[in-house]
Length: 435
Image 1 (cartoon, rainbow, N blue to C red):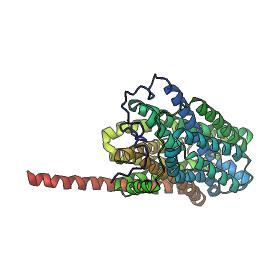
Image 2: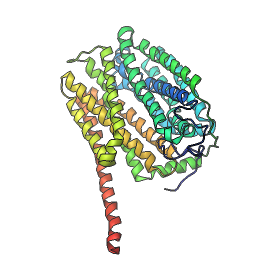
Image 3: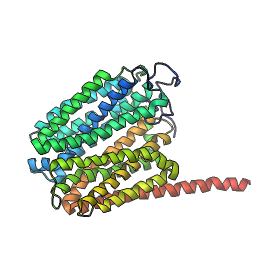
Image 4: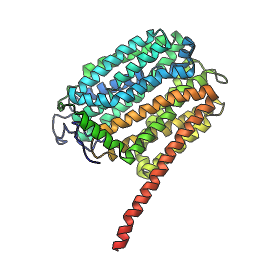
């Protein structure tokens, strides 16, 4: 794939490759490193930003049954309060990451948080389901400026040897924000209603935004680049023409389709018979996310032992087993199924997302942004289609949708295995002829 210069950082998730604006050696003293001045402030600031981002992005997911009851909406209609936010983020992440090249990572992150927080304080006052969906779409678009900008900021400001740990703290903030926001929303909604719950999440995001603004160090290695839409289009086209990258984008989207469908609909299943759980307990189900933290951290060891495709086969099998187990009408079986689904999803996502930055030989920022777009489009599609399937066929309908998506991942991985085997055979033939 021919390189195309866009002025973008060449590192988003790969610690081994220096950014275009921070090509200095790892020993440059003014770059951030553990134990050095500013590193702890930077880590705390981006951890807070990660919490705010995911607490806001999925703020209505644990509240969908209550939202449906309040507005007289179906599960499919209410699911759009999640899908609109993730869909808007998916559409806006690439253009906003490009704007950060011109106006700065810190400025883009700050603007994204401010707009998203303001919308978050307005969301509880939405007079109708239509207004709620519209506000959530604007909120998702605003949040799109944060993930890619944060990764580029870290690549430019942190010493390469410390980059993986710094990114890990930001991702941990994402995970904890997504989990704690849902749990907080569930318990507050049980006591005071879903509007108060959304207000509580908005106030949590305000506190995180204040911490971010006060703690984030100024960027010292960012160099503004002029916007070059043609070069950006060439880079994006090049990535989309790469067969392996296309497969990785599809895998990320399909895994997230399963995950989005399951966690959008699970609340409806658990508040209904035979379970009849209260809203607070339903929100606490999202503690299962902690399993994902463990499985994503173990993905590197799985790849080292089984190879990339072997790890994907294991993730597919685990996710499928969890879907089938969740069909039982025993709460313990449903929770065990959620554990397997979550473990399989996070492992598969970790393998696919890390493979993107290793596969792209240029324009890694755009390659990762495209993966995020596919990932959140999968979340949006999964949330909406999962709710429609639930309305049509109950939980079995949602599971059937998940199985179809898992079979899609399996088919893509099998195709990749066959393509790799064919490539090895082609390479071996000339060697055999020479010998």
